Image 1 (cartoon, helix red, strand yellow):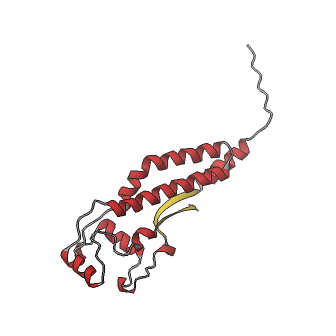
Image 2: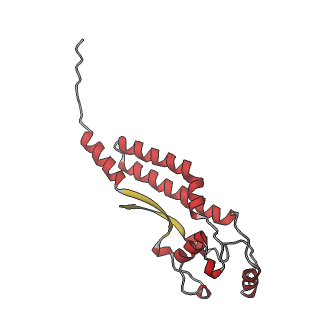
Image 3: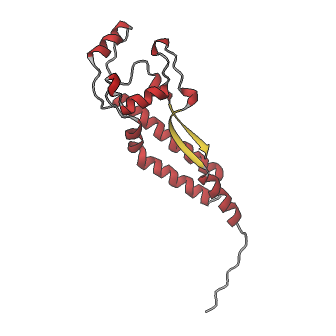
Amino acid sequence: MNVTTKVTKDNVGELLRSLQELARRDVLVGVTEERSDRDDPEAGTLGNASLAYIHEHGSPVQNIPARPFLEPGIQAAKERVAGMFEKAAQAALDGKEAAAVQALDKAGLIAQNTVRARITSGPFAPLAQATLAARRRRGRTGTKPLIDTGQLRNSITYVVREK
């Protein structure tokens, strides 16, 4: 039995270019340099990125317990993000570079929103009485850890960038 194959259009070059373009991109979630500054002069010299690190890992020296939100937030979004990565790969295989990048953007947005929701909902170690008293002195009544002004939560974002 003889089988004959006829190639009417060779898309291999375009397919490879599209896959290479996708492979050159990262989706990063956290506090970008542009979002690290704080509007509150009482916050001191620490930016949102530093505060995020301290809260994520804790600071025994400052008696701040770890209140992880970034890694657990990413873990909670893992399946949905993986689905978007699959869509990105399929779009790249179909030669649809713009759709692949759009799927990466959706993956970043899903992860960003899941991390922000984690900051809002916790669960976290409760605030110390001294922290609650300091908040009251500044006219704040909230008792949720990680949420005083909302600046840290709002600084969580994503970027799709070239490696």
